[in-house]
Length: 299
Image (cartoon, rainbow, N blue to C red; front, side, top):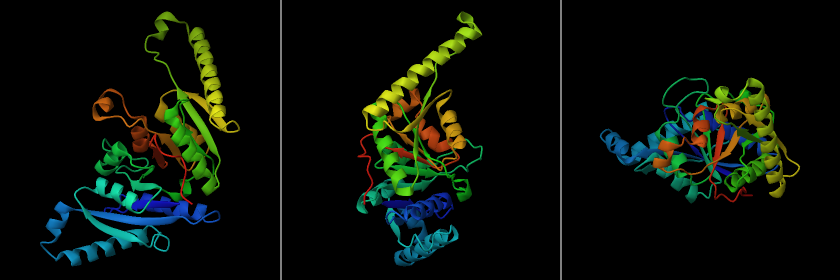
């Protein structure tokens, strides 16, 4: 496996670096995990810095600072290759670096901490990368506590359609590399704002139970049809993001894997992106997998 790790000098990437080290250590018994750190200095920032030093000196200083960030995050002996590149935008440059290095995906930080309450949670770089989604992307809170990465299975947000297939295959491949089982979780809900006008409490509970049974049967059949017949799965009822986080907490999961519909800007205004919301709010790392991903990892 090879992961490209975004290194931010403002320490937003501290959690991402720790997760990269964790992935490397967990996969060490099965195969080598290669990590490449990338720090992007945008052209406008470079122009400002060159007022004080020539370009080679600026790049050298940034490389030293990036190495210090990695060292302080405890990954200095594992993440030894750090590229400092100049680009028009950090998001696009990280995407290009992933392609250049033939990476399996990106590991990046977000703005908001695991338990922090703030309106801006992803940050512009993470948001833009999730919109483009050139490869699987790990999104990690900056204050990730490695001891909170549980010893349970990987949770996979699943809907019984082709849109989830890449995420399911990716999760299984990742689980094999790091020695974790996978649990496929489907979350369903129906609008209940006016249900009490037409149904009694008992009737509503009966409907929920029937609805869950149908959803469970659909998920079981879909998993079996796509090669996951022996997999663990469960169906939960409620708000999707909240229930997926609850499932991760219940199972002591180290991370959540989800697919993406790659919504456009206008579509996002009408329909929230579950993958982006999950990446923004989950206290544990979230991996967002593009729908056209092959579902495999390099050897």
